Length: 66
Figure 1: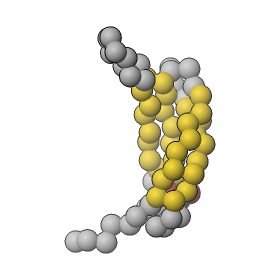
Figure 2: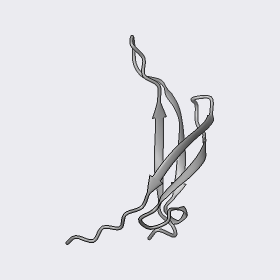
Figure 3: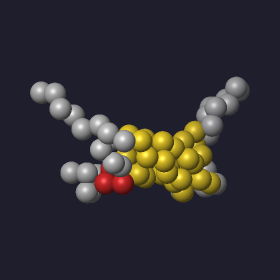
Figure 4: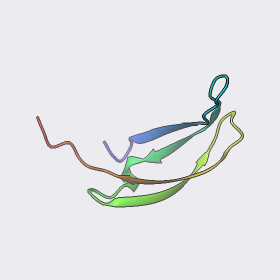
């Protein structure tokens, strides 16, 4: 149900030495996506990674196969 479902996005950095660090998590409600059209969003990161904002472009394509 796109009215209630949301996409969870976890963002990490990439360390050359050691393990990658979590930068935060953001949620994108699927209802915000137009069907078969690109949409751009600025999403607030939350969590232990210090926060920040990410910019993404996403497109919702409904599954039509069986």
